[in-house]
Length: 194
Image 1 (tube, rainbow, N blue to C red):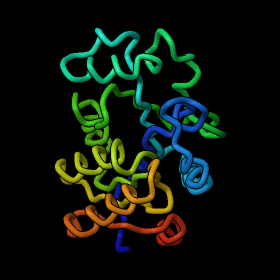
Image 2: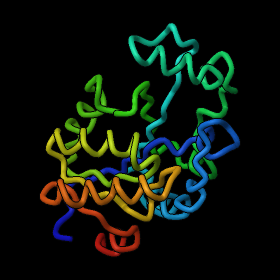
Image 3: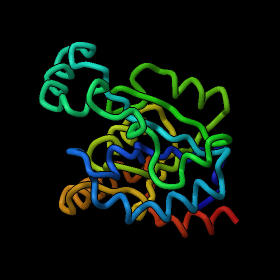
Image 4: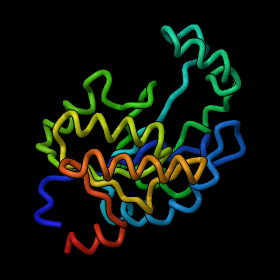
């Protein structure tokens, strides 16, 4: 694995609204939770949990996001119980020292806040977990590559709603971005830390 440098664990959208019985339920999330809990539990001060936060009402969002939330009106703030925004399972107990980073889009990079935080901490490596592999994890990963981070995606700690899009996403990342991205298993990463 080589020297890891200054790293952070970026755990993408492991929230109750995806773990529980909602229209956005991701059944696989339960399968990746143990790996995420182990990594975040061992290294909470290096962990940042992104949270996808829907607007109160579709009209609060611009352009096609407004259309998106007109379709998914039941997932807006005026209908969704606010506690479903929070992290699933035992993860909230890790904050602090772990941190939240709330976002309104698939990518956490759009407004520059996260990159500025990581740069101020001299972070050069991001270890990415969470969901979904073909949406928010993909947007997070591609943005991190564009911003020149070394990116490690833990393939047993990311999930999708469908096996075929999970497989296709990991194949795409491995084949097209092999110089800038590494795929590995959680235990392989943890044991490489020494």
